[in-house]
Image (cartoon, rainbow, N blue to C red; front, top):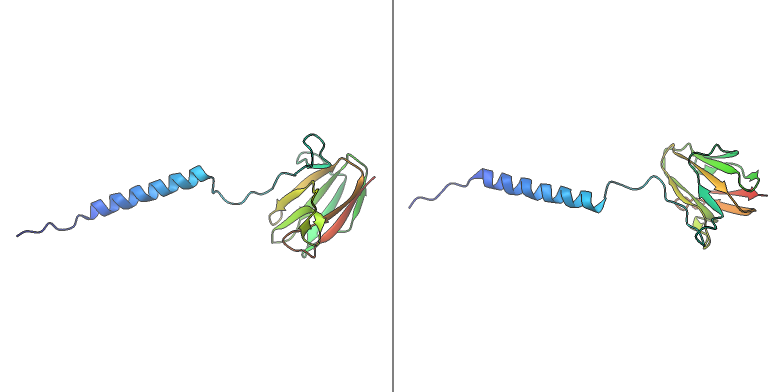
Length: 144
């Protein structure tokens, strides 16, 4: 009795087909990695208290460095604040305190190492800003 020797090309074809199917499913699922920013949430559509505005020139800047936000800033309603991450780690810019988002937060942005974002603050008020990754990070944007 003669037994056929295994044909390695069948295994290679099956492996290549399986890898191709896996790649197609990953692409279809959009698993290209985490987003660089998360769009702000608002309480009511059309009445945002603040919003990310990447193209606007900032009226003030808050630097994120050594796992701390820079000094609080005061701006007028409608003006913008740049948040510049100088650290080699990710931070978030969220309305809230102690690393927890406020229920009515209007900003929720992830900044990778050395990334920046600009936020327009529309309504007057005191905006407590925190990092949800590093709860000790806190600052204030006072909008008049």
